[in-house]
Length: 199
Length: 199
Image (cartoon, rainbow over all chains, first blue to last red; front, side, top):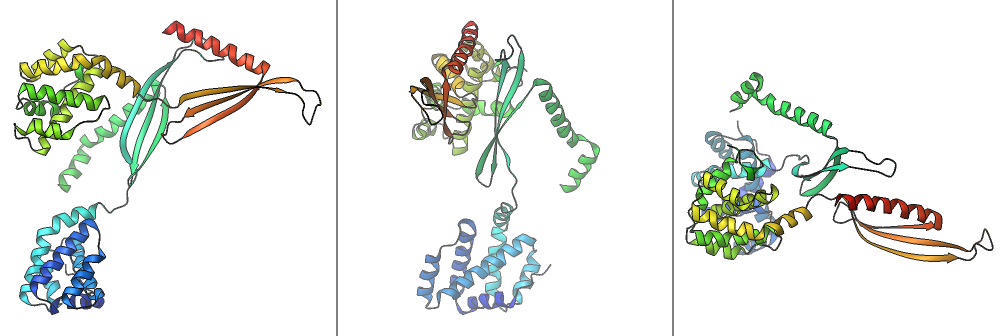
């Protein structure tokens, strides 16, 4: 599968032709830092001053490399396809090899970062419970009414929420039975077949 | 194999694996590590520098340090949770393969702090909302816009309640006439008699 690069993207990457390969290596490293930690405009200004070009050109160059790496990692492009896609840009052989090396070394890590960007549902964080017995109320004395109270802590995108729930033991047993049935589904032949094929 | 300190269930696999890591420490260092972990369980905070110093002799990496703290935490808190006495804990740990000197050291630290630990666990059990304080005031209404001579005592009650979220602290204010207040007082006294009977 070949990457199709837009004209704007090609323009941005054309800047890389004007600098030597050590600088391109440096830009590659900066691009990876940004993918891991977020961009920092001071680095752009420093680089622009050293190379005597406008800040935007440096910024576009680095962002171009970032986009190239993320798109290739996203689509899991093979070496050959990556080289063919980069050939379009008309870079010298050395530069192509450098970009390929950058891609191969960091593909796994970039994929890890990209996997965390998908939509997120609230997920389990912690469950506290207590078992109580109600012995009397204002209306009725001499009762015995057991109840289980839960505080379910959930987490979504860094925010925590807590739900308080209460149930009697019969419903709790039913709940446990349903959840064990759900776990048991993994052991059916249908699920086993699917899981084997995914692996 | 059922263990009392795991609540009459099987011992988790990771605990078995990490007990062999613990055996690598000398028994003196392990007792000091237990003291640190107990301090953490009692809410006094753990001194990670001391822990690193203790484990540096056995050349533990950071993964090993975390694992040994986790397994000691689990053993001590489960033993407290299921009210296991220190001899049973000692025999069960020896069955799992922890050497005798390490077990004696661990059980001695556990025994020293067992009551305090169980108190702390009791306090951190799930509670939904807590009454923090009550303040009251008795007023005497002389007259109002409805009636010229009212001459009635009223009591003003203010309950400071800590809700289930740590952030919500709401004061509940109510004013009661003498009769209503008398009813409230009788009912609460009956509830108190019932609570004293159970204590």
